[in-house]
Image: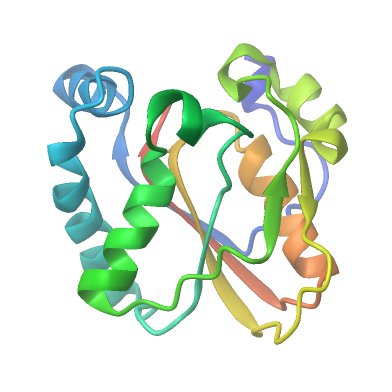
Length: 174
């Protein structure tokens, strides 16, 4: 339960998880992420774009949460990266992969909330030389568990000059 406790103010202005990570949806997400069933990516991208339109954010730049170093080389793909690429190619969404960088190799799912927040400075950082900072962005991730990743990334984006950060995720645990 420690993971779900919030203390202090959030850097996220809003968080929009599309589905609960339970029952058949959990199985679907597992098949996509862990079993590499990439044919689900276009479906998930369409769901995300539909949500962006309903929220009036379809013209807002998207900043995907970056994969851990070596993940794409190791597994051949990253789910969030692939969603961002599909949204850019098929829905002409402005995707900004030039803002955030992930330094840590450790999987977030193996850490508790306090570890995620405490070590967040070592996990994510702003890329150097970021220019042309939009006023508003949508931070994209696949699954929100504790919210620590979204929180740290939103804080970094705001420190770069972004005024409003919306979090958008396919699934929420809990």
